[in-house]
Image (cartoon, rainbow, N blue to C red; front, top):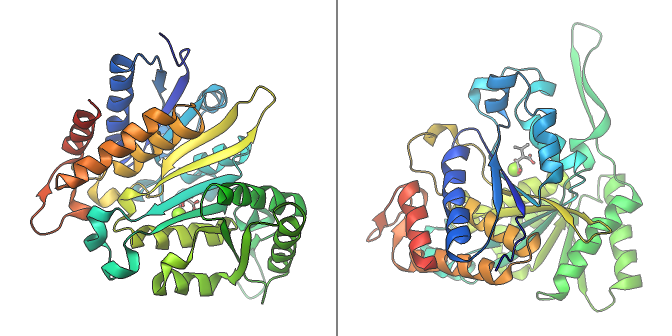
Amino acid sequence: MNKTKSRKILLLPGDGIGPEVVREVKKIIEWFNKNKSLDFSFEEELIGGASIDANKIPITDEVFYKSLESDAVILGACGGPKWDNLEFSKRPERALLKLRKELKLFANLRPAICFKQLVDSSSLKPEIVSGLDIMIVRELTGGIYFGEPRGIEPIENNERRGINTHSYTTGEIQRIARVAFDLAKKRKNKVTSCEKSNVMEAGVLWREEVQALKDKEYKKVELNHMLADNCAMQLLRNPKQFDIILADNLFGDMLSDEAAMLTGSLGLLPSASLGLRDKKGKIRSLYEPVHGSAPDIAGKNVANPIATILSLSMALRYSLDLPKEADLLDASVQTVLDDGLRTKDIMSVGKKEVTTTDMGDAIISKLK
Ligand code: IPM
Ligand code: MG
């Protein structure tokens, strides 16, 4: 039986710890192919600094078109000190931003779940984080990341000015708010929308449009508005008050790093970036861990592969229509944590410290 009709997964390991964590994902895909009669075809390509070194640009057209044609793209990480001095438009991160923008992946889902086995790894008290289950819905193709005008320009007195533009349209706000409201219905039915409407016009518009959409189409969903700085504070004070946090590109970036640490480690958080469903029902998507390339620990086989493995699980769920396989993978991660295996970032007294490779192998052994 060929359940997957040879669906295409593109692996983009990238830089730093990217190749190490994506290697574990590759092993899992191979395992599914062999043992679950699945038939994923997968290819691996360069992105970010690795692509700059080989091709002088952060992503080639060939890789870009492969991403367009894939059923799911799984990315490790882009960037590192080696490329920090490059001109902005040539930096490794541009590859990631290009993929997000041109694949129109406007909805970034970042679940922050505190696993019961890891409550002690969080810097917050166990009673504050145990049972935590938040979904951050971050707008990903608009706002200050992409707004024009942008740049650095010379001004009088030998000074320079750096410019970025933050703007959102009604349509951009509505489509991301819709994602948050639809997801809320499958969760605790509660959305907290964040902006800075006390200082920014774009924040005022954000608040008004989100409220208007709720009043019109999502009457039964509970909606609260919160200033983004207050949300940052509330995440530390009482994170369990949140179900879904809806935020723009920049606030969503910051709040998701913060939420990640509540769960114990940035090494645990997966993410899915999704576009609209096309006429054939296909949804463009990119899956990546929330963490970056972590150059300080790259090449040492100590990185935590769980965020990337859980990103594969999100791909199985959202793009490949294999929820049972996603459940199986999630459960295997849980069992390995139950067994006390820990990578360095989540290590605690009495547990067994393992390498990246060991963690991947252990998760695979539980799939059986
Ligand atoms: C993230 C990262 C990226 C971002 C960087 C690497 C461009 O921090 O995915 O959260 O700012 O979006
Ligand atoms: Mg970030």
